[in-house]
Length: 461
Image: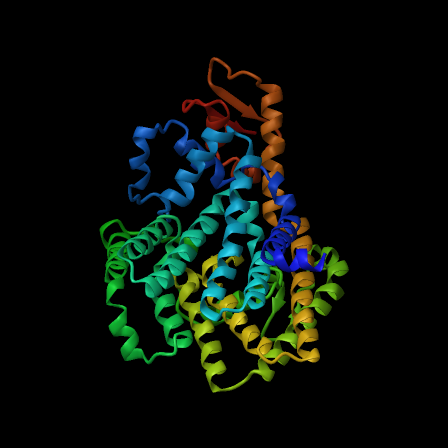
């Protein structure tokens, strides 16, 4: 038995990580289409294979440009699964599990320690900030973009070792797929530079001389920014208008809190400057059963992390911690100045530096491990997992995503019961509805998709 485990160590641990991550987010597989899902489904409903190039056009009526991560994903999903959201969710969680493996593989490439890489993969795969991404199909661009971002990072290090032009071309290709899925991939050159600076054991001059081959990536970044901000400017209104004041510091604080499994809703219910909770009963009553488990598990994680950092603390470690924080902030650059539009799912790419840093710390600890250090690592992993489990359980019961998808599903079923076939007038009246129902169904979009007819008119009463 022991020999079998030793022989299949990597396979078994990877399988266990996949199983635990799947267990944590399993309920999200049943979430229905809502809001932006209906908009994108309607956009791709009449698209043929020959029209796919049109999905790559820059537009001024929507804030984002994610032709692969959003439009192509929904196009493929609709052609494979029709209007069954379960199949779409399977694709989403598949990419998430791949990302977890790639985090571990990247950590192993950098530090050559299997256990540290496995733990980093586990922590990433179970992070509570993935809840929104894996629950709302319109956010699948996040995991798709992260997959190709990580593949670009890994192929870059393979290129460094093998000096193959083919692998360099693959790096650029993966980066292009990443940036057409997620604008957060713009940070790729920064990740390369800081990883080389803090983990490559070279000074900045040598690094810059050796990175001339990433010029095509810098050029792509420049062209992307030029197009999105000057040629086809982003329609930045309302919550998308950048703000530069102390709210940005508050924004960074909450991204840091969400990174370690603090519930998203705390941003709106906790006064960080005064360390006080809101007295809102709609928050306090549902949160009561989760308060002590979350407090205990977060405390265990933070104390364990503090012990491991202290044990390995030296000037070089401090620099690497600083680098991880810089990557976190720079990785959030597309949204860091949007305090009215901040959500945990934006951590999907920007958190990569944090998990790589954890792998580095664990590598240092494991080179001269003691019984106390082993216990601290176990507490770190256990505290993290139970904090995430508690936060995800609480979030699933109280988050607006859970409510919106339920409303959407309820009213689509209601419509299909009342109108099994589209009336000749092509007018569908939804009685007993309100503005929230209209929002969940994305106004006119949902029923156009359901009846596969662009002339359907929905009236909400």
